[in-house]
Amino acid sequence: MSDAEYLAKAHALLARIEAQIDAWLDDDVVDIDSHRTGGLLELSLPGAGAGSKIVINTQPPLQEIWLAARSGGYHFKWDGARWVDREGQEFFARLSESASEQSGQALTFSA
Image (cartoon, rainbow, N blue to C red; front, side):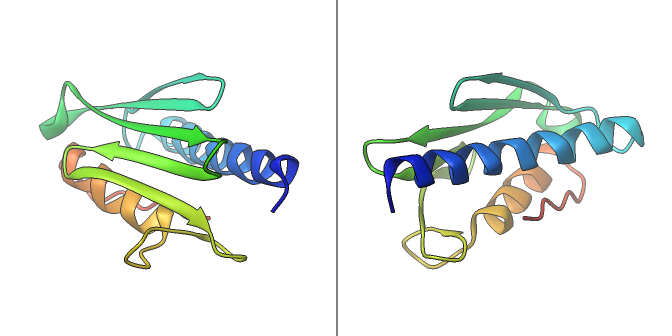
């Protein structure tokens, strides 16, 4: 994949996460605070996870997306159809698990 294709896919992923959070805020589902600086998106979670964060970061030199959560750090590569980690877990599934665990309520992110 070219660098331009990577950047387009990575920024689309971050935009999708922000759109989901905006929809939840509009529907009063959950109050997640998000802050984006370039290729870094920081999510501050409420409830049981008050004070906890999830950080999603683009890694252009490696063409990866990194996710840091209470449960650990995960690296995702584009497999031609989706972002997957070394174990084959899809990015949005891992993000959903981490956000649900840290917020204390079921949250589902989707591509």
